[in-house]
Length: 114
Length: 114
Image 1 (cartoon, helix red, strand yellow):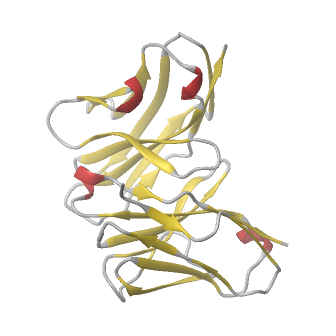
Image 2: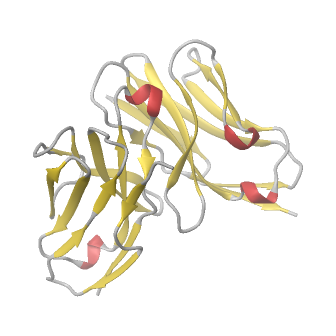
């Protein structure tokens, strides 16, 4: 079984400041990890994903995430927040070699303050 | 541009009505999924399908059923709508391996049951 915990349902940052959204996972086998972004009144869009190989993953819109197996974490970062980054972000996990189901975290709403 | 299309963005239905939510994808994906999204609960899997005429229960199937008669179409059915089914419903599709491709989501249907 797998699970995801997102720390902080709401995060506020100033425009230009570092964005850090936290995600920890639990998995019995090596996981695949994802971050999705949801803008208001829209569906979810894949931001980035970790499968195998390089543990630092770069995604769209300047975001990146680092897979840390020892910490069971996959935190999302962006060096400088932009107003357009205001959205809800979901961390997700699925198991390698298994069914195609994905388990999502509860989401973190990012507010960017001008 | 690849797409998952949900037939309605907003729906208002009365308690006890039978409700159909339609989802169509044009990517020839084998796998399709229905989630509901509620504040503080994230996304919860209702049903999924790996192939035509196949369906599997997700985490919260009670009160729902699904139909997949064609590969591109996956319908969610609320047999007798209740107010606790007021929610945002998200359809997604994927092609294996999921770890490489992730999900493609539709824009969502916001259902209100009165």
